[in-house]
Image 1 (cartoon, rainbow, N blue to C red):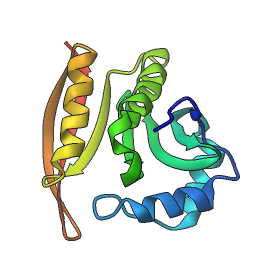
Image 2: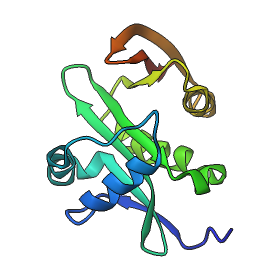
Image 3: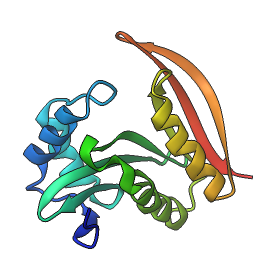
Image 4: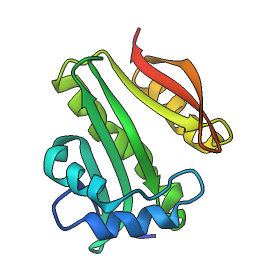
Length: 156
């Protein structure tokens, strides 16, 4: 697999439909939402939302929502197209979020994942270890039919 043509960049106004298509291919743990939400991300969260492209086709997406109240970036969605999951793109996108987290001098990165989504948990766990940070479960939530566990990653 050629990886030299993969780029990670901030989302733009033209990414909406491609993001929805990508997310639709990454079910069951990531689900597409109303396109208006992605429009909001494209217009108000460009510095914390990123896409991976290979030859102009979206193959990865991460959305980070900064919370001034919690001094945290909440990762709302992260996904990599199933055909590209062994390229460590999730980790590369998390590093983009980490750079913003550091620049903003925030206290944590938070996220919520289905308790059965072991690969996603392992991605975040490995990332926390790589950054010499702590990963901690902060609560359990029953959201629709999903049993979500909320976590935070923070400096030791």
